[in-house]
Every structure is written in C-alpha cells, then in structure tokens.
Image 1: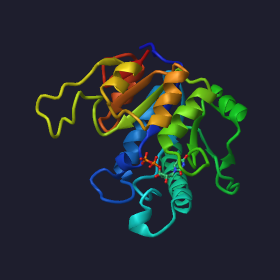
Image 2 (image 1 turned 135 degrees about the vertical axis):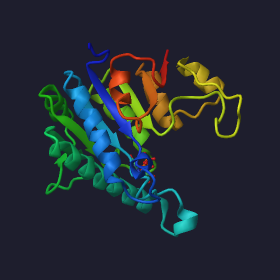
Image 3 (image 1 turned 120 degrees about the vertical axis):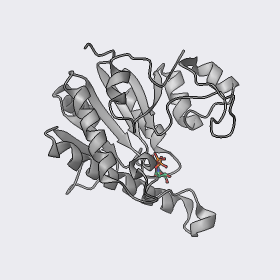
Length: 237
Ligand code: UDP
C-alpha cells in the first residue's frame, strides 16, 4: 500500500474523544485513535497532530460562565494539553514514539513549540502532538491545525470528526442532504458550508493546503484516507 501523502497534520476535535460520554475522554476512543495513527506511521507517513479541548473546556461562553473570554480561552488551551498528554500516553503504550510541543511553555511536561524541531521529529518518525492551540486567545484549534500544517509543510490537513464528510445541508435535519466527495474552497464559501471557522479556512485556502474531513471514529478510516481511498470529503482549489 502506497500512501498518498508524505506528511499529514491530523486535527482531532476534543469532542470526538468523548465517545459516548458527556465530558472528558473515553479511553476506548484514545486507544482506537492510537492504533489508527500507528498504522499510518508504519507506512512511513510523517504525522503531526493538533488536538482540541472542547470535551473539557471552551472559552467562548462568557455569558454562561462569567469568565471573561480571553481568560477562558487560556483555560481552553490548557484543556488541549490534557488531551495531548492522554493521546501521547495511548500512543507510547503501543510503541509509537511521540513528542508533545506546547504553544504555552510548560517545560515539565512538554517541549516548547519550535518549528524546526517539530519538523526534525516527524522526519525521524516521531509523532508530534501540538498542544495549547496557537497560544493565543480568540483562536481555535482548527486555526492552530491550519497554521501548524502550513508551518511544517504538511501535504494536507485531515480533520477527523464524528461525521463522515461535508454535506450540502445538515444530514440530521435534511433527508435530501448529499455528501460531497470533492469540493473547492470557493464552493464551500459560496454555499456557506461550515468546514472550519473562517480564520482556519482562509489560512488553508490562501496557502493552498488541501483539507480532508472524515470520520475518525470509524477504525481504519485514517489509513483509508492516507492511502487515497474515497473516504470523507476533499477540499482543494
Ligand atoms: N483556544 C484558544 N486559542 C487557540 C486554540 C484554542 O483560545 O489557539 C481555546 C478556545 O477557548 C477553545 C478551546 O481552547 O474554545 C478549545 O479548543 P477548540 O474549541 O478549538 O477545541 P475542539 O472544538 O477541537 O474540541
């Protein structure tokens, strides 16, 4: 099996780590992700990961929490580090070498984010997990994913979610919704399809970084996408 991509940036949402739980993460999901990631590294694919934090904390609900936005956003960034450490543990347990790099310094548990060092790690076959998003409030981990993907010159950003691609409408509400196999950036904008937030999406479009949206919770799907099977939706120019 020949991989279609040499270097990938996998964006995992915090929420998808929950499995059937309503908070935190499910060890079963972490273990499945770890196995799937291991399978693609065994093909020689270089893997970097940005992980979200929405299963633990989102900073955006100032009205609800009474915590001001920027402060809450930093809490959200810390949540992504917890998820990153959980995924790191899951990967190392099955023999995958990893490095966690954080955009907010916390030297006892993670390397600081250093672009050239991250590239070196993936070249050596280590899976690099980027924690703490971009390190800045008012951003999302999707934006962190696009940014890091461009910085390390990944061939693609793969957004692993709980849905199997981009639909013409919300499939849970509209029975006529159809799934796209391929779509252009421009079509996503014209049809107001919510692939990522605008900042993240624009970064991809301006830098010609293809996006794949796929269901990461289906075991084996990551390998299918990496080997070019028609899984999920591919967004490009
Ligand atoms: N966050 C932030 N800056 C970043 C990335 C994340 O402030 O660069 C905060 C923000 O509050 C966000 C939370 O961290 O709500 C968790 O990230 P996100 O919601 O993107 O996670 P996901 O939706 O992927 O679980």
